[in-house]
Length: 141
Image 1: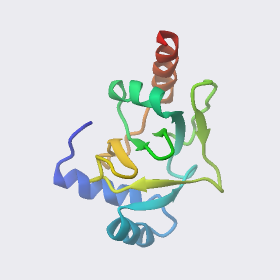
Image 2 (image 1 turned 120 degrees about the vertical axis):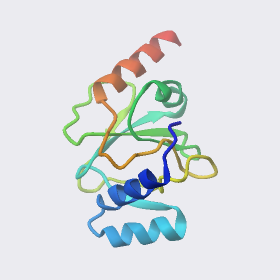
Image 3 (image 1 turned 135 degrees about the horizontal axis):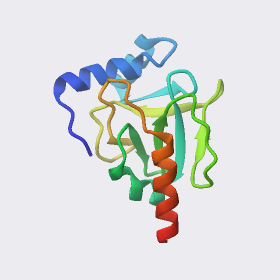
Image 4 (image 1 turned 180 degrees about the horizontal axis):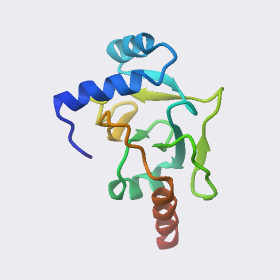
């Protein structure tokens, strides 16, 4: 997990909230519950992986990644232009797809939390690097 200075945490919160059609709404939810639902396909999309595979590859990748231990999944935030052909993972995005996103400060369980929190710069996971890492991890199994 990457550390985030306080400045980056503030910037990351603003960056996450900006993905919501109503940033004030997202900020209220983050403040009150620690999680907000954000639409996929506008600012970023997500690749959902099986928990074990996602946990195996996350340390070798840059960019935001969320762990949902209850759903046993890892979500990697990727560009909206991502084309996904890998059998390891599912590309999520589009007008009816939303993701529960924790505040940048949530980097430990319980609940959904960041394995790699966003830094607010707009850096996303490189989908080619993610596909390659997942493919290599699958071959090692």
